[in-house]
Length: 268
Image (cartoon, rainbow, N blue to C red; front, side):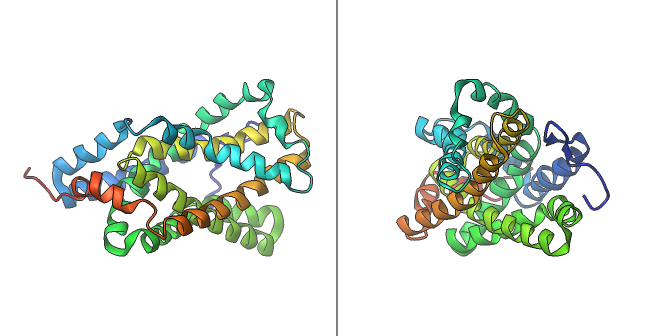
């Protein structure tokens, strides 16, 4: 980070505890504070209850946990250098996945989603519609990570490479945001599902890094899998926008949850 605070612990490639206070206060803390100001204690209680929304259908859980990781590996296997990518699906490899997944759960996934999908997304969709609202949120979400990714990218590859790498990150983050919105709108605004999806993205990055470090995946296959995420999420986001005509399931969310999520303060 800009203050030289470590964000990733090597060689395990897991988040550093040093960044946890900033995540908690900067996202969940801000979301709870703004909800308290705009909706009162009742609004805070409703926001917290959204962490426990789980009756949404097993297919949505399956997508949240495995959809993007599987897409990432499959697309990577089709790219140059990705011949060995499917080794990530071997039983011996998959035994390492739960630890990689859980290593990220208490960081971005658990503590960011109250802000992005708990507070911001309902309001942005309501005011600007799902397409423009999601686009705005995607840019905000991407630039929240700027202190983490841009300085390290510049240190590793120089100014041009660092800026190009962060530009790609912004593009991928925006594409991912459309996928999050689509899942959010089909799961009654469940923050639990948002956390599971977020953890699958972060945890898989650590998982692939671990397989490469253990020699299970050659470096070329690991790089192809990471590029597979870039291509996969952009294509999937475009498909979701096209097939839903830009609605991303918003009508369903409006019918099931929006009025409650945006309900004003109900007394003290």
